[in-house]
Amino acid sequence: MIERALALLPRRVRVGAAPIVPERSVAGRTLLLLITIMSFLSAVTLGGVVLVQKSAIAWSSDVGREVTIQIRPVEGEVMESNLRTAVSLAQATPGVSSARALTLEESQKLLEPWLGAGLDLTAIEVPRLVVVQLADPIDADVEKLARDLEAVKGASLDTHAAWRQQLNTMAGTIVFSGLMILTLIGVATVLAIIFATRGAMATNREIVDVLHYIGASNRFIAGAFQGRFLSIGLQGGFLGAVAAVLFFMLIGTAAGNMMSNQASAQFGVLFGRFALGWDGMIFIILVVPVIAALTAVTSRHTVRRYLSQTS
Amino acid sequence: MIEFSDVGLRYGNGPEILKDLTFSIEPGSFHFLTGPSGAGKTSLLRLLLLSLKPSRGRVTMFDQDVSDLTQDRLLQMRRHIGIVFQEFRLLDHLTTYENVALPLRVLGQAESEYRPNVTELLEWVGLGERMDAPPSLLSGGEKQRAAIARAVIARPKVLLADEPTGNVDPELSSRLVHLFAELNRTLGTTIILATHELPLLDQFPYPRMLLSKGELVIHD
Image 1 (cartoon, each protein chain N blue to C red):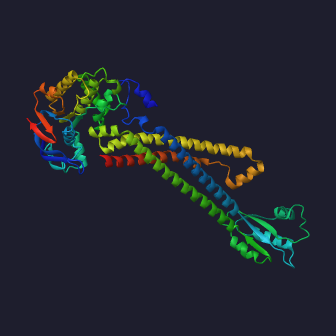
Image 2 (image 1 turned 90 degrees about the vertical axis):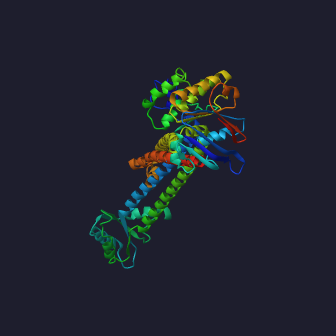
Image 3 (image 1 turned 90 degrees about the horizontal axis):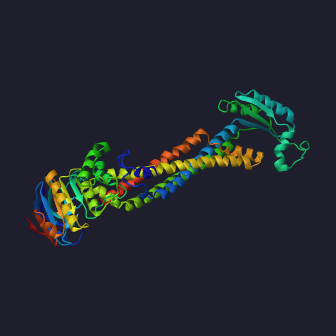
């Protein structure tokens, strides 16, 4: 647009040389739209991967900060006494910040989804739980606690390792799938740029011939076309990245407004708050130069190949 | 400067378009290349422009055999050769000034460096007032003068012209050939001008190369 406006100025007023490849001769609008869409998809995929990764790390960290002691009813044993012993042993373990036995009411609430509300647990003997918070999951001597608990009959320790393993596997699968999708988007973008470049070369055959006749090297001609494609790549990458940022802002706001507070809280625990953070933003901004470079390199390679085939 | 020795040219497996061409061109000379349509004038010019390689024989340009030149060396040599086409082949999206300056841009010169030369040449060919106009607004004669200016702006040693008067009236044809003659005289550029307009040839005292069915029948 700016170049078109400058072209209207008299030569003596203009600064800099006019582009050798005219802006409108490269299938600009279609390619710009295509690169914008590809950049948007790349940025959204990348943002999604970052969100899942961050949520998984946060979840894994939360779960890792807690272990649970389960005490099953054993004939001849006093449950309340065993609970107190288990709490004492836990509190005496290095790296444990607190230990607390769940009350009967709390245990009842945990069983409500399976057994229904209004259940009187005093009539039946159910296992009881001690929730142990770790000050530092790495330094806490969980193995010592497990050994100490062997003295309490019916007691067992659950470190949630299986849960964490499953969570990490799920997050890893999502991240891997996201990266696969990104690769496919990249390949599709490269193919689209190759077709667009070959089309542009065919359309501009006259310019290529004239440049050859006046002694231009293939490198010079490729550079003239590359400049045009780099410009389209930069514009498309920028528009796609802006659209992706707006998309995350929009669904973040929508998720907060449309869901009930409870549902929103659960959703937030599972998938985060759609807050990308600075690291997510940096990934999305990085899409712009990556897409522009991909466009420039692909078009340059295609142009040089085309020229070596035709000259 | 240019030596052809038993040169033949064929496209693919087709018949020979040019046969047994043997001639030499001296530096600073002016030659008409003539013959009926299909005689092989354009093919010979493409050989001289180094955009084709002969099927047989030996072509020497600027004291070098062109048959085994590298791509880079070929490019260097092509920069010593200017070309003017019948259909002008100016780039429509550039102004007359930008079209003429194109060979210097290709050579990597900055605009501040080439601007005085381009302006001076455009004034010399009578396009001083038309330098900001795009080719679409130029007349046939103006387009051809712009194309000639573009061909000589980088001071080539040889200037090839393929039917440069084909799209203009006889009076303008004569004036254009006078312009080529002036370039030959003032800059010392070797000129090979292909035309099939015999009346035009009679107006100028330059030697003629007559091609017929791919063979050089007169070279005086």
